[in-house]
Length: 128
Image 1 (cartoon, rainbow, N blue to C red):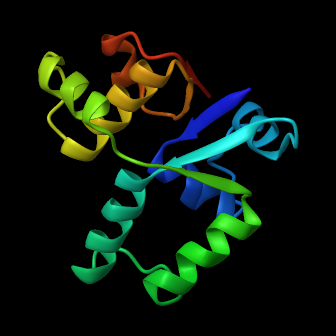
Image 2 (cartoon, helix red, strand yellow):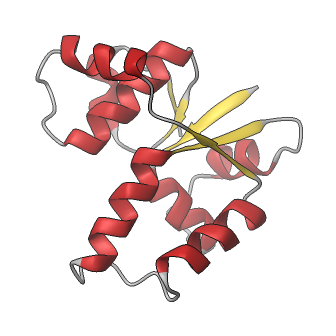
């Protein structure tokens, strides 16, 4: 099974946060699952770190290299198909990073591991 991580899910996984649900933790840890991270999430983390809104504890590149290795991540690129889907989404939610994640999940037919119930308005399969 392929699963797409929301940005907060990745951070909580790496920090072993109690906010991560047991089901999300189990799905991400299951070695038979392909755990995807959108390049959009990496971009969001880079921006937030650069603005001083997020402390990753490491320089961005080191953080990402560690995250990919520790969480066994496959990076999902942003494609024209994903962007086309973004352009057709209703404006239930205005965060551009989240909207791109929704579009990627819908286009690729993968569930998102996310606590954010705003995804439900888009018909995204969300697991938490």
